[in-house]
Image (cartoon, rainbow, N blue to C red; front, side, top):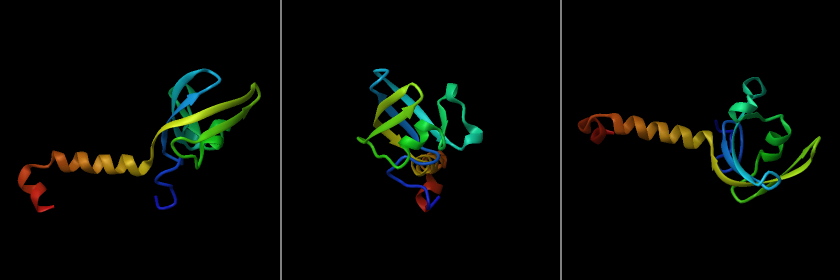
Length: 104
């Protein structure tokens, strides 16, 4: 987990982009190649889009070179594995009865 960036696109990130070529917003989850499923929005770190998005921050623009030509994608929103772990911990703490929460 320490090798995964907290404020940049990396493995496990969910990223919302604006695709200027298609003139639409899209959401992708960055996964390992074994898990990739483009129809489900899961793209691998080794795909052209995945490689272009890696290490980008919100507000950055990524240029994706595909067989059909170049596409410009602006990063609108980013949620990393760290954000997901933090949200899960908060949800678990909220689920605890009141007395247990105070002892934390």
